[in-house]
Image (cartoon, rainbow, N blue to C red; front, side):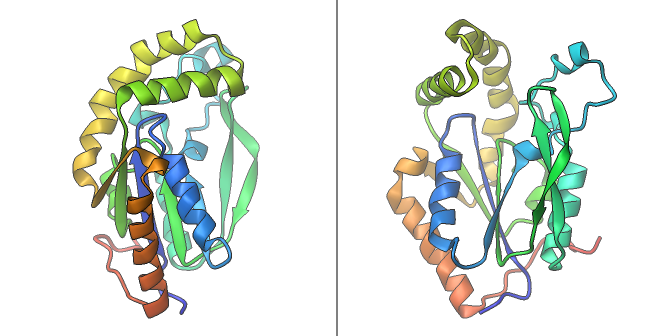
Length: 220
């Protein structure tokens, strides 16, 4: 049954928490139906007006790094069944790419990112809010392995960035958003029970056409 208003699921959590694994697990179940993933990382602010040296100073773990105004605008369009051009962020140039990705409206929209629960306007568009809660030691190990294997960084640079930026930003901005979550999922993608419960809930909504109401007018 097609919902008159798409379902928005927000999935937050610290870097390396496993929120992407949770997102992928849910997506795999519904990918043959009507689901789309919107990554908050794609909505970092355009920095083309800055010199490259200035862009290198960007704190990507701070709420001000994100263009939430554009993200909210795109979500509102998807809620009224309009397609959007999702931006692409070029991490080599530290600014937004000139390319974009066409996103068609779907019944289920998964919004995934470290700070998707930090912005009240974003939260008000969500029907279900999840926080993936994983111990700090596991998160830093996963981040080190990812940055070394996928991004060619040294362990020294990863640890320095974690201690100077990632950890303090997590404690100041990400961890406090846990209180806004409807469901807290410990240990991310390894928590099959929590993921199965979410999948069952989504299936029920899709099969019954259950309408959920938003805290905010989507046409504002």
